[in-house]
Image (cartoon, rainbow, N blue to C red; front, side, top):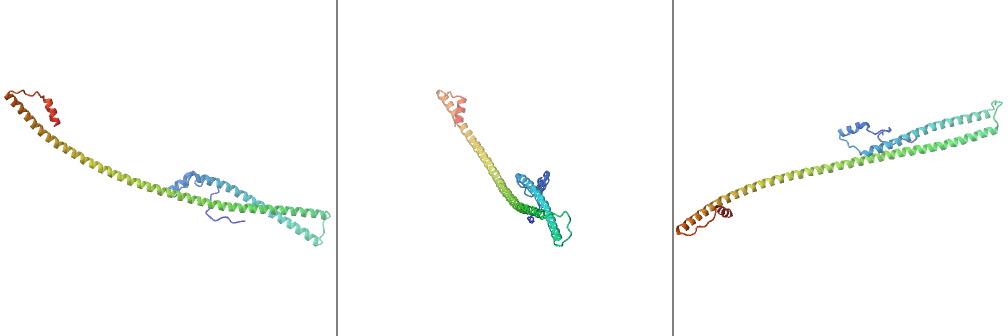
Length: 241
């Protein structure tokens, strides 16, 4: 029979490679890459087919052993008949006729041909099974490697995006702090300018009120009509000034 393909032993059971999630948790704790979710379903389906092929191969081997035993019995019977005829041994009274022997020999030959054909068919099936198993194993290894590489690439990509996002966040925080500091300085400058303007305005308003009061006094002294401006008007004029 053909040799089994090289490679690590596979799980021939119908269940997943990590029952109850214990292997998955262990792989996560050890930092291993977890294949995609559909990988285990594909593996389980493949293992079921491989188990069925293994059972069929074992059945073929048992049938082949039975064929070999049958061939051995036929050869021993043929040798026994040939020795009895050539050795002129005493033949029993119920010795079969030549036609019976020829018919039995033809039947045995047909049985041998049938068994040999079955043996060749079983050998082809066994070879096909082993080639299929080797090809499936290689495809699985390639698929797992590609999935691991893809997951690693995704991990590196999202790690780079996370680092970039952190840098942008820090930069935005620094810009925000600088804007707050600039707004604080601007507010202080506006308050100072407003205070200076109010101080200057109060000086001019006081002078204007003094001149107006003096104007009223002079008008009374010369007998002129005094302007009837109210304090509200004065305050309005003062505010406008």
